[in-house]
Amino acid sequence: MRYLASCSYILARKKRRKEKRDGNLKLAKDDYRIRIREIAEERGIVHLCHFTPAPNLNSIIEYGFLCRDHLFAARHFACTSSDHRLDSENRAISVSISAINHRMFEGKRAKSGREDWIVFMLCPSILWTHECRFYSRNAARREMLGHSGFLGGPWALNEMFSPISSPHGFTGESYRSDTGIPDCLTTYSDAEVQVLEPISSSYVIGAWVSQLSLAEKVQLHLNQLSGPERNVLVRDFSPRLSNKFDSWG
Image (tube, rainbow, N blue to C red):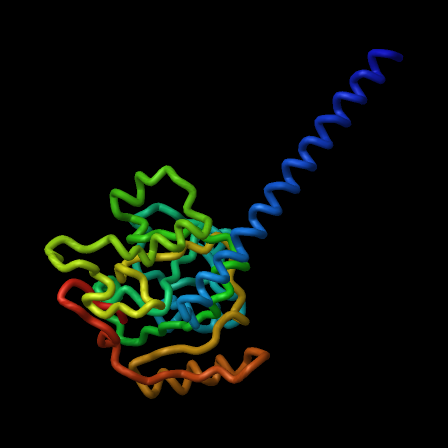
């Protein structure tokens, strides 16, 4: 009986330790999500971006944005921009902050041979309501693939807007200020956020297309979503900001 009581005491103590540890982790996560929200609001971030071929429109409205692993498991149709992710991260949904990576987008459009692409504008609250990883450069770059630090907190988000980093060939004092990069844009256009949870279509706040005929179709689908009115911008996909070194779409 004494042995059983001792075992019960040990198990109970382990349970209390686990509950305390889990509670501390939750507090830490809550704290950094609050800080992530503060950073987003301080920088005036009003939307995130995700581009996709138009054939995915129906699925996105019905099921939301899903990673490759979830799409495969659910056997949902998806028109992908490439057969494989270069970073091999099939459980992530890639979004960018305030603008798209223009160079990458142009490459994917050219490779696909399609003109019917949609840039979805998403609510920035995803940054603090969903589990995310923040990459200061494209996640497939060597320095990002080899990164061993924690990329899910406010420090990693701030690194996307580094005031001291600059591209090769820049000889000024401050790359961001000297080239006029707004606070809401990342220092490099290829910076990305990997969202590790499904994103409901309710997080869509608008869309951008280059064709009027596609805009009408997208608008009809967005009108199916509950909540505030969502508008579709019709404009060519030329960069919205460019400097000598980079372009943001």
